[in-house]
Amino acid sequence: MAGKPQTRFPSEVIEKIFLSSLRPNEVSLLLFIARFQFGFNKLQVCICRQSEFSYIGMGRAQISKTINSLISKKVILQGEDFFSFNLNLDEWGVSQRVKCDLERYNSLISIHVHRQSKLPK
Image (cartoon, rainbow, N blue to C red; front, side):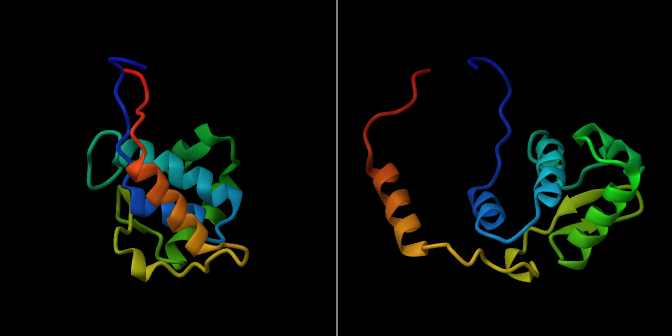
């Protein structure tokens, strides 16, 4: 991976996604948007046609249903020719996973923050 571009995905957004009750298709679509929004350090993803989301393996009807679901939950924003994450995470209308132990999760984060070893470069 050395020398290859990396997608800088905000930790708060990642946590919100995996701690939420989003469906697999919604997560796939969010990762697609993230690749272009955060991977190219943009505020918005210029996708004029919903059919461009077909790269993630969904048909048109499923793409439309998934986009509409994420918009109604205020997870993504849509303009005339763009999509973007709603970075105001408190506005997201998604519930937290029922079996999520935030105390244990935060403990795991603490362990990794204070750990000395790093990935090799």
